[in-house]
Amino acid sequence: MVVGVLVLELRMGEANSLKSKRRVLKSLLDKVKSRYNVSVAEVGKQDTWQFSTVGVSFISNDSAHVHQTLSAVVRFVEGMGTVELLDVRTELL
Image 1 (cartoon, rainbow, N blue to C red):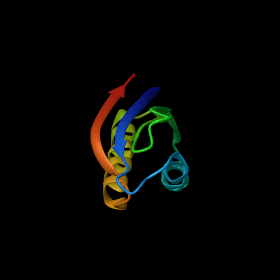
Image 2 (cartoon, rainbow, N blue to C red; image 1 turned 90 degrees about the horizontal axis):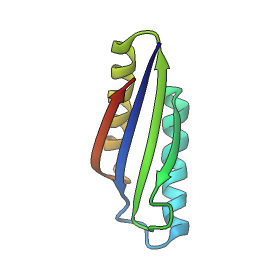
Image 3 (spheres, rainbow, N blue to C red; image 1 turned 90 degrees about the vertical axis):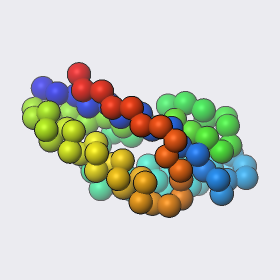
Image 4 (spheres, helix red, strand yellow; image 1 turned 135 degrees about the vertical axis):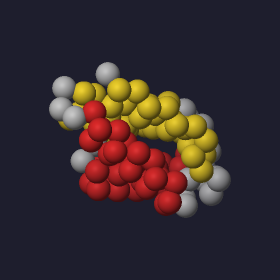
């Protein structure tokens, strides 16, 4: 069993309040979760209105599949255009 953990540091330039940040982030997290069947949550910077840390996890018995799925999530988030991706960290356990 291989567990993949992805940590994304995001900047939401359009957000001008916590309410607008949460609206943008909820939409993004829901889309990622439904499209890639991964677990995803905001894991840091909850009270900062332009920045967020998002954690994504995925489990499979094939490390190539885990890496492929997490890479697809990164490409999807980059392509959304609603957030700026500041940092990406990936770890396979």
